[in-house]
Length: 314
Image 1 (cartoon, rainbow, N blue to C red):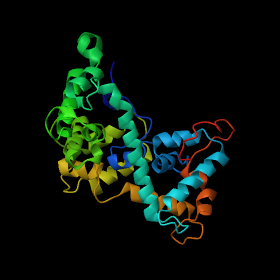
Image 2: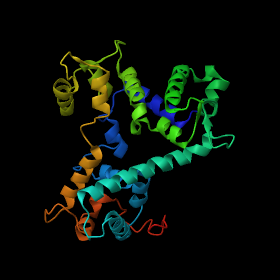
Image 3: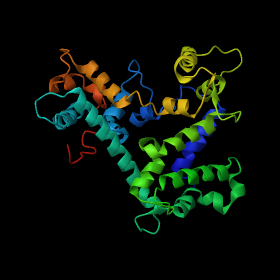
């Protein structure tokens, strides 16, 4: 059986070899909030996942509007940490950060028992490898479509970086760093290395414009490029390639995929505030949030799901 992290890599390989239907992002800080496209002209799904976390957003999608609004009201009371009856931008930001941490923690918990085979409270590299690559290890010839040996080597390399005490076993924090390396300072180099290996097709240790665009979009003969491709070319020239040598090195790639000068959580808090602040006073009342509840949370138009998934906190 091939496990989730491996399948994520395989899907990246597949999408890189076929024409993507949508723009692909490599920016980890943005994907931390949601992997969905942020386009409010289409829907507010990105905002829902950013505000609630992916799992909770799916729960709200199954609720009728009135129940969705009621639960959002409960959340508003929790967000208002100083109990002044208003939700500030900072309180919004802190809530979004907490929602994302909860999503990561629950994701790790769901996978933990699958890999901790001997129930010793640790996941060894051998346990992870055997569970993830079991079918390949049993019969390498049956999995000949992909180079699983290389993928397994990459996993082990990342595992060793996450394994801060070097015992080849991961506790909860180390395993979280392995699964979500973008959240850990000591994992940034491996995130950059993996990204460059995926995109650097000519193996020169850099990402040039052709490789940069090719990672997001592959044009077909005589087909006109989407408008955003021209925008990305301009982004590469003006912002990505800081030293103007026609390619991105490791530092420039780091600034691209894990930007230190742009906080996506803060940007999302400002966005939600802007969308909902009817009187433009820089803070949100419960009424302002509930009036714009569809920006914050999803719901089902019918009564389906009214009795579903009533969590204790609601």
